[in-house]
Amino acid sequence: MKAHETVMAWVTEELRSGRLRIGDHLPGERALAETLQVSRGSLREALRVLEALGTIRTSTGSGPRSGTVVTAAPEQALTLALNLQLATSHVQHSDVYEVRLLLETWAAAHADHDGAEWGDAERVLTLMDEPGLPVPEFLQLDAEFHIALSRSAGNPLISTLMDALRTAIADHTLARARSLPDWERTAIRLRAEHRAIFESFRDGDAARATEQLRAHIRGYYEETASAPEA
Image (cartoon, rainbow, N blue to C red; front, side, top):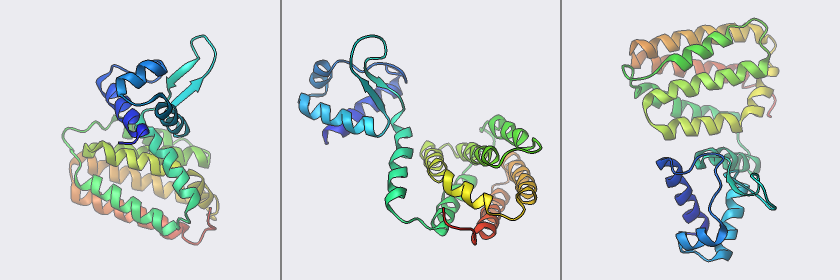
């Protein structure tokens, strides 16, 4: 392993075990280097990588805010890494569509309908019904709804990938939505489709939920395909 991979693996395990939590300080440089059996120079390089990813924050001086503090779980760093990838690669609207289809229809087909908790998804649907909801807030709730449904598949990597993707393309999604000639009409349709999809998930009809999601994602892609690129 490279030094930053060693440190990341250690932080991940400490977070998973509960020995380390968001907001906690990492051990001092000397102690951590000894624990992980890496040189202090390699450790400093590793900490710079993790800080760039948003996993930790390093501050000099004294007091409770000084030192190296865990600011995000390593999974959250995936969003930042994906943002960098998207910034340096030309991602087409069709690329986003294809990845969403892949992730979300898989989650629908593998959902644990009996064991899943549906409260979060239902709460988001209620919030989306608020009249005059600004487009950015609607889209944020839309993303939360789809991510909440994906969690029912019991695969944390799927929901983590979806969360990272939806966050990374937020500006792109907003630009597409704002280009539509009648956003309110689109929002009404999306609300109705969300309700139908949710009911299929809750009722345990995997086949219907999968096809409804496929049609929902395809319909919005086709509606926004002619919008200017973000």
